[in-house]
Image (cartoon, rainbow, N blue to C red; front, side, top):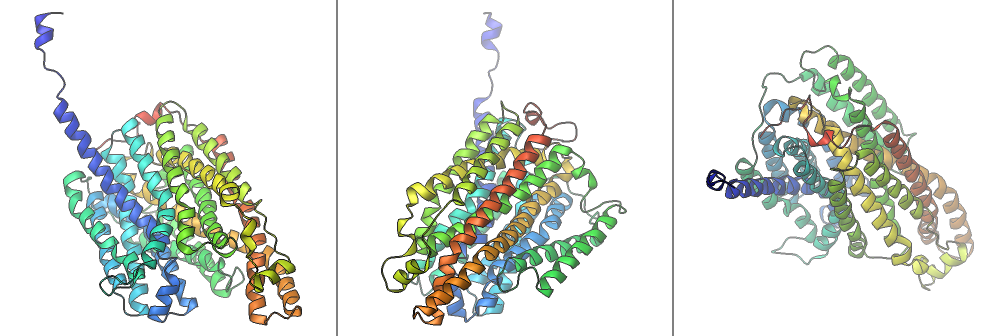
Length: 535
């Protein structure tokens, strides 16, 4: 070893540590934003009865507290993603967070139905701006390879755990005694205000701004694409409601209008110079497969949360807060699955990781479809007489917990590689719209999946409910009580059928992964010929 070697400057450790700290804070901001957006879709669910009572909102309009947010979020995602590409992703990210926080403030202090529903729509707008920009900022902030894989793992964990965290947080906040004169349900909105504003104010310090292309917004495409998605999301949401269903004229009209507008959107996109959704985004087979599977998987996962949370409350007899805690293992499991897959994707092709993850989720949903509860007339009569409850024989730790853990780890193993492959090799100027497409697939898939599985559930439950109600009435149970007990008794049959169909949906997604997802893990360690690393 020469003197020259000894005197050569070593790598600047403080500078490297400062850069890693900078990236760490960037990831914290992006993750907080994504968690806030996702959990807000479920945090208000548990609070609905309290909101309805305080603001005098009837049951029919109460569902709009959830549907209004989903509509605005799902319908505006493509536009939000493209606005980030054109006007700067950090700027749009900050605007989205600020809008979300202000809308949450309005919702927290809402004095009537119109004020609350308006705030939910505004929250959806803020989420549609912030969420695609957040995902695109990961692509342009973190270098390809392990650093980006870890960032996507955290993002995927936040996306998947958000629904479970929302149930727990919603149950806890709703159950609180009034704080400084504010009912607990109001806190489910107000908690977002400081978080959103602080994250927006810190964004310029830790996130790089992307190149902007003002003046290239495809206005006709924005109008037809947004209205088309609104029509589909609304139609699917309405189809999933027992009061309406697939035969409802407004459901059919909404779906037909949505499809027609999206056809017009496709024609417009093929002719304009700067399309809102460039066709090249779908040209890569691996990316197209990722989009398809990321529509099928949430379709089953969101439905699992819906039916399982109802099953745990109605049949097993858990309180809303305890139901939220019953899903806590899901939050931990998806973090574990995401962490494992982010490390494995450096050494194993995404096809094998996501393929195994979807198979695990398929087995979990099949396990849920095997839940059995005695729901005969004699059992319901015992419940009516105060002698126990239907789910007394259902052991959470043996019948539910193992499949929640299996499902969550499977989802973590699926979301990370598919998020990577969905945005990999995108051109730098298309990162925002690519992220918007991915988020849109998840939202449309969730709405479609819930509609399909709710229809399946109703089909299998309705016949049983009619027979049980008739038998209970004949045994002297008052008609109203008999109908309610019959619903609980028939719910298990409908829910288990829905779980089975959900397992089939994920199995189809798994087959698509094994067949068409052919990118190698070595390719994910580079930005590729179409990508330009920024920042």
